Length: 436
Length: 168
Image (tube, rainbow over all chains, first blue to last red; front, side, top):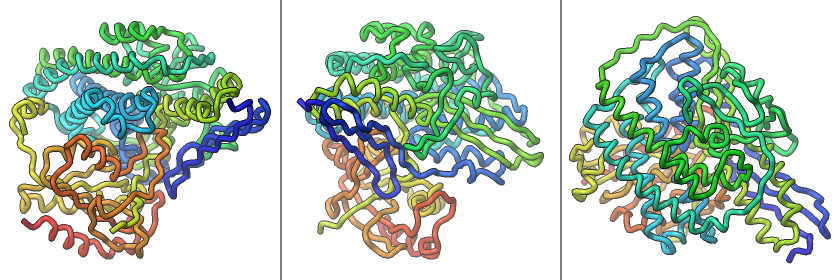
């Protein structure tokens, strides 16, 4: 037992790559310092796109993140289209949503399998898990491979898509390719159920912690749907919808002394975004099998346990596969038709928004009459979760302060991981010492 | 490639994988961190001269590497690397030649260590027979789109070294 005296300083700053730091100092049951710190260096992506043509924006911002590259591409492309009044065909819209779903599956199975599962199984990383639960790991890897192949097909490659352009797409999958993909998606549903059962078998290790939280997500009403792509902004504290162009009235970004990233707040001191936020706003529109998985875990709307975000991701992984199977049916019924897109640039300013796997993402751009970018603003989901992580820490730690220090530390680290943060993916370089 | 795997391919078309894959890693928005991507893009222009080689701009896709190296005989990685060398120096090594100096936070999917991914691939029995890494020591890692002079002036040298590696 720690007897309430704890000193936890989890610092992970390694050269350029910054990660969040967890700092907890307590003496005799009194918390002296408790902070979620984000020391990552600013990346200035908004400055990089200034002066660039509207046609180049997506190819630059897709590099912001290797895990959410499709999401950044879609948000920026939608913003360009909104700024210039460009419309997209129903066919292109559906194929883009399929592309987006591939990334949701890709990211969610990675998070569940590679980042969260080691916590549930009590091992430090996925590497020992390979020996401990080889079948489960191989199933996860198979699902990840499917998601990657899916991205390859629709986005042109696994990471950093090349088929998107303002007004539509440069390439559509063939009907034969869509049928083959659909077949694989159907075959993957039993695998997803296996993963759900494996996670359920260790769900007792998910901490039982609730903190009343405002959850912010996209909401689509016409037609109602569990949306990642269309709709306006809503929250569990707000019975209305805010237009995408007004996202700054939601995010209300501000600077915190303990972070180089901006924090956000809306109706409370903080809000949360991500899979659990989408679930809490839209769960009634999940696909049937996704609803069944939610029931397996007893997850219902109104759940305020941030650790359950991982379960919500699992539910969403099932949902995107199931609705994609139906969407491919719709595309095949209509038949894939060739499209030629012609766009004339014009001056304008607007925002684009989609749900990244880890939460709602906003891109805003302004263009001159030649279509050159004169201003940009990007608000990523992880920044919208920082204030909530701090509030979670403050609510959780007094409840667990008597536990052994390593258990407290693990629960705080698990909490951060459950938000599936994107604290740095701008740099992945090797750092090696030669041993021979 | 097995029949199942052929059937698994989303195109539904028999598409045998090329036996060698060259993966350029990194982020072109961070100056020298993008050297791997820069070089693989240039190499891919010579693809018709290397029919058994697939050139992949792998960016910062992290664990996607697992799938890109599977079922290959050889994988060649090009990446920016801290090696204690002068900026611009290129070194060829294998995963067995080095140990990683990186400390992973395990906080997000956005951190990646190529050497650990290769270790996982080995445990899964999916590593190519031959894995070669070309590390290039950076001069600067900062948010900008261009390479530093130390690297920019040596592109032809890097390409010569890499093409030599691809000779049968």
